[in-house]
Length: 322
Image (cartoon, rainbow, N blue to C red; front, side, top):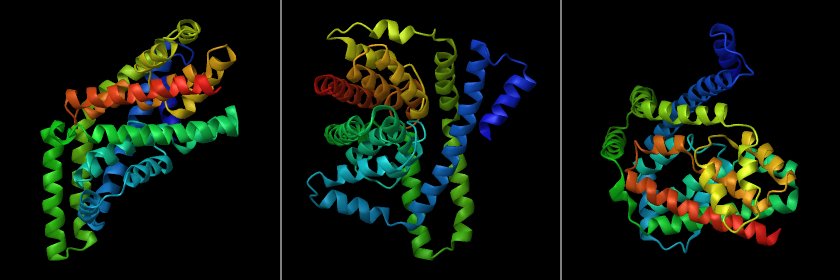
């Protein structure tokens, strides 16, 4: 429905050519902006309900006071596996975890896992590359997110959260305590949850528009064959180069898996192609711009740097195995 509206608006009302770079870029911009904003609002509202009724403080206390020997990172990665969100759509859940005071390392494990291991990515990967490669991809994605969460948890990144999200966290804790004390009904809680969800969406709106605008420009104006040309050389630096050139690109798994298939068919090493795919769906300018409202640039730099390193290692591992 959103795609139909975007097509009608861009090609029907604006009169842009669907085959042109400009038409493709503008269509991408409107489609993804509407989709992301709707998801942001819905997920924020759902997380508001969960934070209001689910004893997140008990989960937080349990995770911080009990040794789980890394099992909490596995659970966070597994949650990422079963939530069908792209990198930008995962941010509201990240905000929900932060609001609930969930340890940052566990939260980061989810943020890494969710876009990399969505059902769409796995289903398309299975149909394109078969069971063996898909299983290796799932396992490597789980390990990547778990190790990434563990490493990032050591940096004490809570101190690099922005005042905006810290204020949301403080307000959420106070509001939950009030609701529990006064036993306020869901009907009376709902308006406050909706207002808070809209506040979150309006707070990140500018960053969403800038990020998707960058993604739309890359989507519409990057020449055909550009990436195949620069990644075709089978050199030691092909994997890190694939990750670097992938960051400006913005696409979901449904859009990038067919491109990876073309890469492999044209002779690009499987590990290099998969590293490119992981970087596209796990690291992107739009995600960075959206996270800027939640994290300082130092936090984003540490996050992107750590995930980039692990993706490069995964690329080399795939090249070695296959």
